Every structure is written in C-alpha cells, then in structure tokens.
Length: 539
Image (cartoon, rainbow, N blue to C red; front, side, top):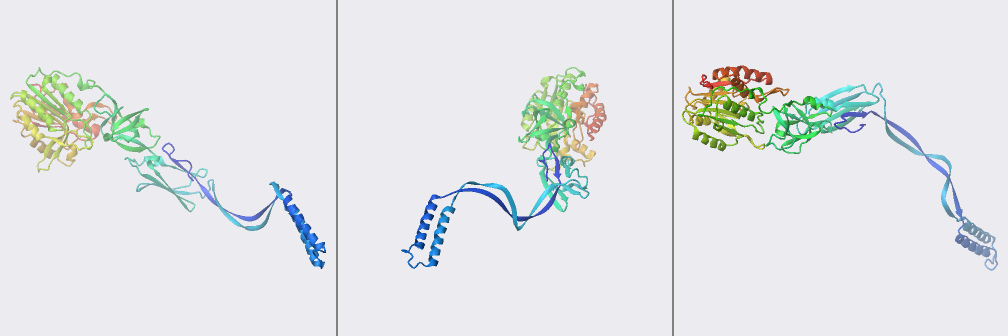
C-alpha cells in the first residue's frame, strides 16, 4: 500500500507491506428482550361487550334458543367470552419499546467469510523483487531483503537523476514489485518526480529581466555553456521563464534545452556566470599603440552578424569584436572614423549594396582598404564547384540564408582600389563542412574564392580558422575569458605588441590561436594566410 503522494519534494516511493488474512464467522439468530407499555382501546371494548352480550342472550334465553341444545349454548357462551377477551386484549402500544439488555443467540443460521489486509513487520521471508523501468530501459532490477518495519522505499529521483533526462516531454517511469505471489504495478509521470531546468547549450547566453532582446540594458548576467537554472514556466514560444535567485528572469529558448533534476539539485553548483565587462576593461581594449600617422586615403568595411537563431546559435561577442577592430584601425593604423563603414546584422544583400556604393564614391586606385567580416558561412557545392557564402541573420522561425557570395564580394572590393588590401575573415563555416575535409582541400577552396581579388603583391586574406574548424570564443568552462573570439583578440594583441608585418602576425596567431582553442575547447583552430604575406600594416 502506497504511503503518501509522490512529488518532486517527496520523491521517495514508500510502500507498506500488507498481509491478507481470511476469517470465517458462524451466523446465529439474535434474540433481544424489550418492555412495551399498552393502553385499552374503548371502541374495541364496547364492540366486544356488545357482541358478548348478544352471544350470552342467545345462549341462555329461551326466546332465542328454544331447544336449549347444550352444544349450541356452550358454543355461544364461548363466543361471548372470546369477544369480551378480545375487546380488552386488543390494546394500543404507547411509546417506544424499552430494552432490558437481555440477549441470547438462538439457532445457527449460516456462515460468513471476510478477508482483511493488515500491516506486517519484517520477517525472514519478507523479500520483494523490484523492477524500475524508464522508457525501454530497466534502470533497477533487484531483490530487496532489508525491509525496515515492514516498509519498502524506492528512491525514484535518485534513480532518474542518473538517466540525464532532457526534453519537454520526459515520459513516465514504471515500477513493478513482486511480493508474496502478488504483483503490484505503479506508473508516474517524470514531472511528478523531477523538476525542469534550462541548461545552456550555447557558448554564452544572456539572462534578462524582460523579453526585449533589442537592448542590453535588461541583461542581468551572461551564463556560460552548461549552466542550469530552474524553469518557472515554458508557455512562451521564445523564452524560458527561469528562477535566478528569488526573482524570475528570461533565457532565450534557442540557447537552452530542458533537463530534469531532483528538487535537492544544487543550482549554484551548475551556474557558470560570465562577468559583464564594459568595453575598455579587457587587456587588448586598453593601451592601444599608435603605429603610424593618420591615413587620410584609407577606408575600411566591417561586417558583424551576431543574432542568429535556430541551427546557427548566437555569435556572442561578434559586435564587441567589430568594435575592437574598428578601435585599432582608428587608433593604431590612423583610419578616419568617417571612412570606416560599420555594418551590423545584415539579413539581405541590399544593405551591403548601399554601403559599397558609398565606398566607391570616395575610393580611388591609391586607396588602402581593410575589411573585417564576422558571422556564419556555408560551403555551397551544388554547382559542382565549392562556393563560399556568408549567411545573414535570421528570424527564429526561419533558417539562415546566404546573402553574400564571398567570391563576388571579393571581386567587387578588388575594383575599388589597386593599393594594399587586407581582409580579416572570422567566418565560421564548420557547420556546413563536417570534419572529414583535408587542410589542403580547404586551402584550394579558399584560394579559388579569392583569386579575383587583385594583383598578388597588393592583397592578403587572413582567415581565423580552416573551413572545417569552428571560430571559438575566448571563454573557459568556468566563465573566465577575454570577451572576444580568439582570432580577433590575438590579432589585436599582435598589434598591441607592435607586430605589423603580416607574416609575423600570422606566426603569432598560429602559436596563440591554436593553443588557446585546444586548451579552452579541446578543438583545433588554425589560422590561414593567403596572398602577399610580406605586407606591413604599419607602412
């Protein structure tokens, strides 16, 4: 017999062991003695006396009974006597009968059998066979002899915790117990035993106090991958309402999945909080050196997409990376603010076309050009040749689509100037490539895509990673880090160390980017430099 209800706060299934006992009883007739008061009924007395008088007259008068037969005389006298007695004996009951308390059982009337269940204490043969199943797996199947005071306890939350259950519909857990030739079966929904938590699956996600994701003013904290916070509600289509401290906050559903934990789960042990540092508090954001004088005839294009959804997770710190590169272009390399074209969150080619048109109006053959591109890309092989595409940001209900053909973009840029052109690409192609592509094939695809950029002695393209490698952020599993992607961070670090020769910058990146990616994420990230490796950014 189950003791109490199962709930996340009381997830121990407690069962009292019961024994069936059969009893046979003999049935007998029960006689009880009562006292009843009566009173005479005048009407019945009058009728009885009148009838008796007529009977006596008929029996003893010669006028009626002329023959004077003894038999008839005795009969009529008897009738008269009976009528007198009937008149007096036909009395009316007064009040309710009063019991005297005297009882006795008379003859046997039959038998009755009753079955009762009673709690039992532990005995030597009190052994239960317990089987616990979740979905198609048996997670516990054992013989239990250690029964305490006739009670069997099954720690459901402890058993289910080990299953790492995830998803909005966790299903049911079934329990079968074989005890003393009887089988007992129980079934409970997992949500009656465990509680839902939102586990962060993206590298970084913002914890907000409202669902407005167009501003950063409502961000309470940044949570690192693996953080788990208790869910208060999942009814919103785009957001998890979660408990952070004693208050309700919001996490974007695209950045987390539902996992199920016991009520005694220590949330604090699973929170990886990433400190929010304003721009200027990371080492490469300060002490920026001046590497050359102002360069009037120099223009730059910066493209940074951050807010992807669905298959492509948000690229945390993409906008901060863009600001970092822009700061170094202005402070270290002397670019004028008006000549830096900063484009964020492009979702179509139209936005970029307007920017390129403005760049054409101020560029000439002697214009120096610098380009920084950050976002997701894909390798399109549908035409037979591998083409590199840049993906625009997308709505949560839509898939990200290609908005730029990089080969065409590079060709357009090559027509702006015949002077030095340097392109920095922190585009992540890894999700469309897989891991089975060789480094040599990667290099051939990249070279093919940039072959129309211009004369070989005037251009260089520096990729932050091979096509089959992810562009990683400089954040550790504990939340500490540099608030940038690894590639733009170390590119800025090289300039901060006054390294301006591209070949030396590439060597610096090879040492530091590769090492940091493997140390923090256990994945490779190998920068690649194509074109003229002897260009100097400080000239």
